[in-house]
Every structure is written in structure tokens, then in C-alpha cells.
Length: 355
Image 1 (spheres, one colour):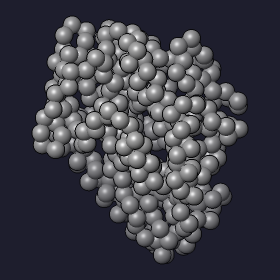
Image 2 (cartoon, helix red, strand yellow):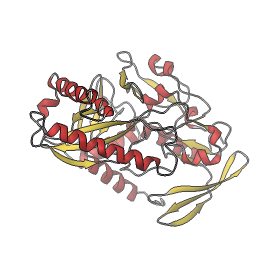
Image 3 (cartoon, one colour):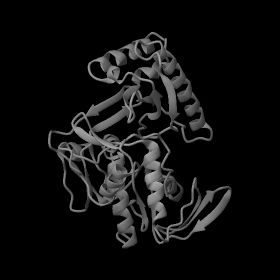
Image 4 (cartoon, one colour):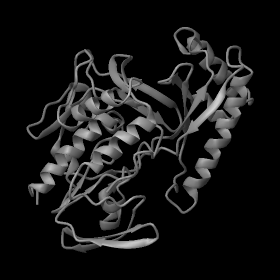
């Protein structure tokens, strides 16, 4: 059970490669990389800081995954589905009712994998199994065309960010625009802008995310107007805007909780499902974005127990809602690692592990 491929505008499939540019996980992440590279010349490896990523055109990512799903026999895809009810029997999910296209459908699963990113099914099974103690800021990403990309490269990129932060500090831009990130796009003369949007405590209430999204669009328009007056951005054109991205929508209580110490120490586990070397990229709702890199040459493993919901017989998770401390989740939540999680729990659930 997961969100749509285009839930947010993503251009870097992070966490796929280690510091030497080699694939860090085989299986589905490796097959995904191969398919993306084959699908478009715009898909390229790119080094960001101390790690390598795969830069991908979002439309290409979407099409590749759509085609891949279409090749799989026996798969029923319910688009834009939401969990409307969960029937519980003891420590197991007996039935799941989902709404899709205005109609309901009921599934009686042997096992479930909650890949919603916000633990939607787990919340309905037992809200006490979800940690919401600290909420990272959400994000809204949009593209800009007609950009002189030399302005984004060091050291000129630092001058641009300083100008944006100064304008936000002086009230010429919304204050949270001062925490925005600008990055190179995948096309010529293209930039990606990542806006910083702290979420209110009651962000799950009806209408709250819509309001946050409207605030993000207002921030976007203010920043585009500011950039249009910046030397080198006179020809800037607003491109595609993604939907509000929830980086941390709650973490389940699993059989093991991945810690920040595990990440920084490069810890190994007997039940490892894969490796990760992405820095701790934490979008603190008050302080802004911080990056803490792992020591040189270090990667860590993610144990299967972080993906098995505590005291349940047939509930697994994959992706952002794994069992982890907030800053550990800020490293492990990247897309490449999430694909490795999905493959591992799919196999475990099919084989009846932990049940």
C-alpha cells in the first residue's frame, strides 16, 4: 500500500551509489538503475558532496515504473487508493478496505506492507504503534527553465543563496524562503528549487495539508518573482511544480529501532536487508536543513526488524515510516534505500517470516 509515483517531484534517486560511485545494493535498486539509464540519456550519475546519486527526469521515472508494473502478471493496481478501514483479529490484519475512484474494495491479505510513507494502515490498526514525536519540515519542489546554471555552481551559487537569505531576513521574501535549496536540473538551463515548509502539529487534520500546499505555492511565486530580478535570471520561466512532500510522516514502532549511532558507526546486522551511505539530511522545522556526512568510506546496514511492526503477526512497512530515530530516518528514507526495503519485506511477507 503506497502513494503514487509522482507524489512529489524527485530528480535524484539518492542512496543508490557509494562514495566510489558503485551500486550499494543489488536486486530491485540495480534493476531500476538499469531501466532508468536505458530509458533516457537524461539519466546520469552525479556526485553530490561525498556521495553519488542518479539524476532522473521525473516523467521518465514515472513512465519506467508504470511500464515495469505493467509487465508483472497477477498484479492488481488500485490507483489513488486510500485505506478507509482495517479489520483486526488479534495481532493480525484480517481485512483492508480501500477507496479508489469513488468505490470501495476489500482485500483479505495474508500479509500487508504499508509503504504509504505516513504509516496510514498501521495507524488504523493501532495508532499507538506510530511515533510522531518530532516532525521534519515538508518540502515543495519546482523547476525553473531559462536559468544560467553557472550561477548555481560554487562559489556563485553561495552568493545566490546568501541573497535569498538576506531578502527573507529583511522581509522581502517569506521568512521560510531563506531555507530554500537550489540545485541543477537534469536538462540544460534547468534548476530545481526545494522549498522548506514546517508542518503544524495538526497537519493530519482535514484541509491542513491543502492549506500548507497553498502556502507553498505562495512562497514559490514570491521566490520566482525575486529571482526574475536577479542578474542572470532575467529569462527564468516557471516549470513543473510537484505536490507537497512529507519527509517524515510518522515512524512505526518496530522490532528494532535504527539509531543515529547505528548510522554514524556503520553498524552491521545479521538480518540486514541492504546498505545506505546517504548523509543525515535533516530538515529541522526551526533551524533549517543540516547535512551530517558519514565518516569517509562508511556505510551502514538496515535490519529487517526495523520493517516489522512490533507485536503484530502480518504487518510490515517499507520506506519513510521504518522504525528509526528521527535523524536515522533522515538518512535511511532516501529512494534507493526504500527500493531495497520494499524488495526485502515483499520476500519476507511472501515467505511468512515473522508471522
